Image (cartoon, rainbow, N blue to C red; front, side, top):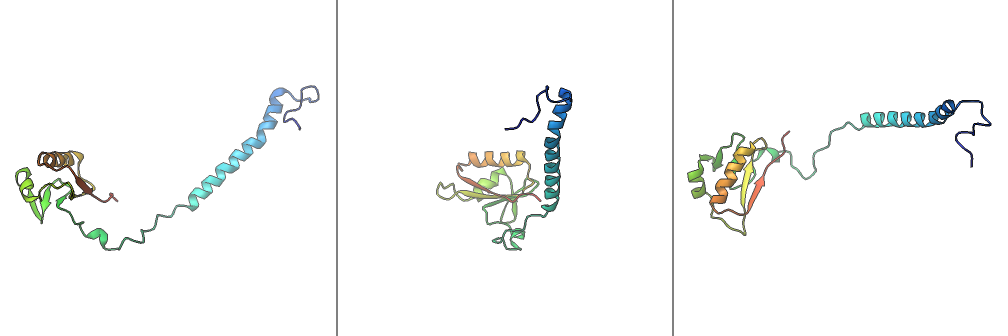
Length: 136
């Protein structure tokens, strides 16, 4: 097996020169890998395609839900805006076998969502499904 750095007795170069000579191939390799990943990153800049199971008009239809919550935090059932008093009266009775479905806007404030969940908890709802789509 050959040594990367020859022993000092057979070489006329100083120790620092021999170390620099041994590191030069490693520096070249790192540079080539860096260039490869820069080029590979530029080639893979295509956006992800649409999922094949998603119909094109599905995003425009609201999901089937018992309660809709818009971005401003308004609670709606059948297009009518409700407050905390009338919300529990208009919702179906709590059922552990059939959870309550809530369709919420993706931009809803967390404070509005927390207020809704507290109201539903006081009404006896234990199982809730939150339906939403990620923001674009």
